[in-house]
Image 1 (cartoon, rainbow, N blue to C red):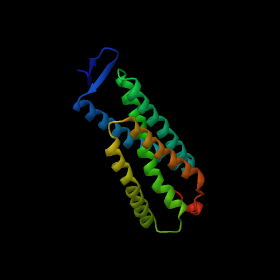
Image 2: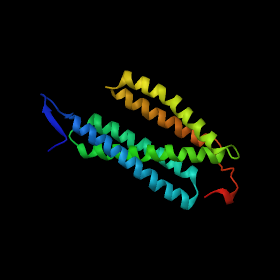
Image 3: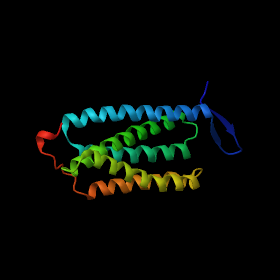
Image 4: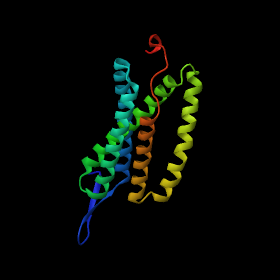
Length: 174
C-alpha cells in the first residue's frame, strides 16, 4: 500500500498525502532525531569538539530542510526523497538541540548547569513562539519553509559569531 496517492491534472501530477503517510513522516522524523542525539552524544564524548559538531549539525539541518522544501515543492512523485530529507532534518535538529544545551553549559561555566539548562530551554521556547505563530499563518505555502530555513541560518550565524570555547577545566569535561 502506498503512503500517498496521485491525482492528475492537465499539466502535472500532484501527490496527495494520506493521514497515515503524515503519521509515518512524523514517526521517522522523531526516530532519526532520537538516533541522531545518541550518535552525536557518542561522537562528542569521544572527540570533545562541541562547537564543530554543533555547526556541522546546523549546516546539515539547513541542507536537509532546504532539500525537504525543494522536494515537497518540486518532486511530488518522489516520496522517498521527502522521507529522506525529513529524516535528515530530524537527525540534525534534534541532535543540535541536545548538543546546544551542553555547549551552552560549557560556555557559561562556572554557572550552575541546571540553571543554564533551564535558561536555554526558556529561550528556546520563547524563540519557538514566533515560529509557531508565523507557521500557522504560512502553513500551506512555500514561505513557511523559507521562514524556517532563515531561522536556522540565523542560528548558524549566531553560533559562528559568539565565543564558544569551553570554560570548564579539562578534567571536568567528560
